[in-house]
Image 1 (cartoon, rainbow, N blue to C red):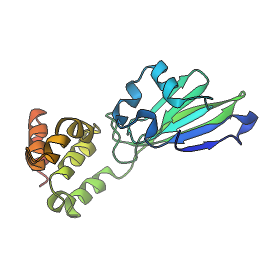
Image 2 (image 1 turned 90 degrees about the vertical axis):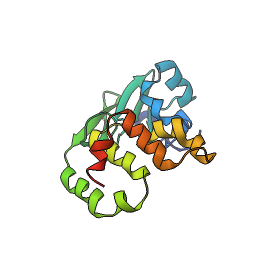
Image 3 (image 1 turned 180 degrees about the horizontal axis):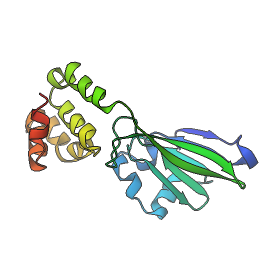
Image 4 (image 1 turned 30 degrees about the vertical axis):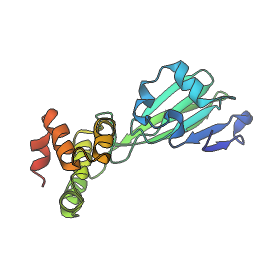
Length: 180
């Protein structure tokens, strides 16, 4: 398995981390996987702690001997909670315990930066999806990749039309248009 592995922790308890490999190219389904699938993807021997990334879903689950964790995201969490998050680990009673910690940050300043930086007005339509992710703390890009990426690459439709279509179908275009 690609990633980082350390066995120098208390009692030889290993930690493994992996940015994308755990869920392959379908990283958005990591929190929804059943325990059997998570265990299979973590591999053998199972580490005491497995940290995955790129899902933006703060996530903590004990699966057999392994504590599986995704820290979430500072600015684009996808669990509906706009606060930033990180994971904190402690060694207790011979094993690792984890906690997802949430914190406030200057959300209004970040929204202003979206507008004033030129990101929304000069980087094409994809930032419109990122803005919706920021506003609602819900994923947009994964669905766009699943539904439209191949069509855009094949030249069958433009990026702008697909982004507008996705936002229109969710009733979110007006929420974005006010910032453009």
